[in-house]
Length: 121
Image (cartoon, rainbow, N blue to C red; front, side):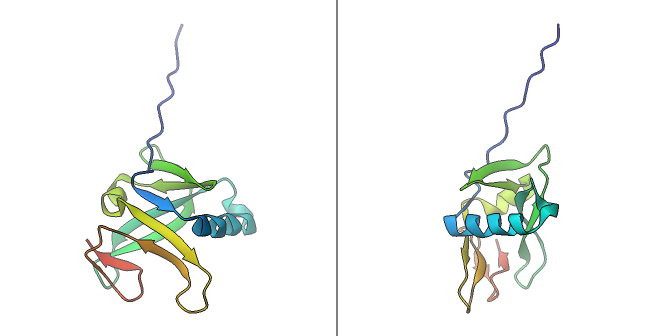
């Protein structure tokens, strides 16, 4: 008799979180595009931008090494490399005409550029 053991998902709660406003906007975006049905929000960092590293967000499927958490009904994925740079970050959303959109508040960023999309760790 073989017993299948289900692995415990890794939790991203201590890595990154979403405000209720950001979760509402992401839920709306997911509902507007059937191609993204059932996907989660992937938050990542990569080399680039005017400060050395830049943020990215896409809708994606979960991978085996992803950190995962759910905030206000939205699944959030973070890969292990990005987790090192995003620890303690908060994603917010504002629909203001000036300066609106998604904003990432990252306590690990030593500086960031004016556009808010890139940072230096």
